[in-house]
Image (cartoon, rainbow, N blue to C red; front, top):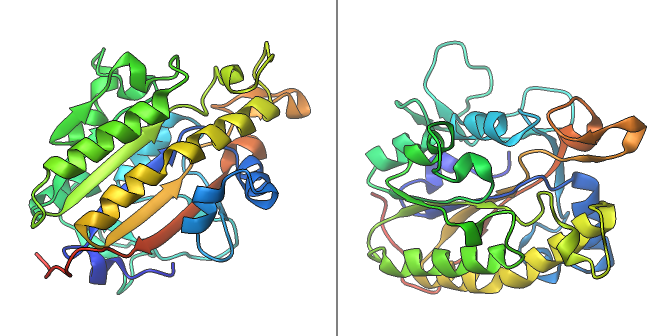
Length: 275
């Protein structure tokens, strides 16, 4: 862990973006090929970090994320965590971990005075069933509509536009925790590769390039508010026939290996004091 969350929570907005279903190898190779220039400008010098997801599908992974169990560095050892709910015996809580007396980081940040907002993407965030209201239900402000979901080829554009509106509505003196579940990479993603009739690694990569093109307004709006702690990662990958496997919710490296990045986005507004 390179960042000290305890020193940042309260004075910084927090943006958490999950690029749903994005594979680590696809993210790494896209960065090397130069097809994700906007992400390249934001990521640390070493680019994407390879980490292991705590879950093999969206619902499980996000439950873990919101409890403070972000993807774990893919190297042996005990790795300190940015956030943690307080419980006895934790071996990954350090002086740099922000510890909440709450069951999840969303509630913990709300108790500190953060406005919490969720922009849903895939089905587990669509607010259409009791199950799909569980994760969004943690947030004070919840959004989902078909144009934000997996069936709309312009979903990320719509999600970013909504995010910019939410950031503009939030009073400058109030901190915000904004979560976005980006849906474009999830199948079906063949629409991003002209002429494709099936989803593939190539269409997965094309979807990532599309997502990258939509990001600048989001980060411009965030900068205008002041400094922000940014987390961008995948919740899980997906298999496209490797070793006979397809999809996710299964135990294969293409599913468990995910890209991860954490960084501070400098703000153009005047510095803010801690809450």
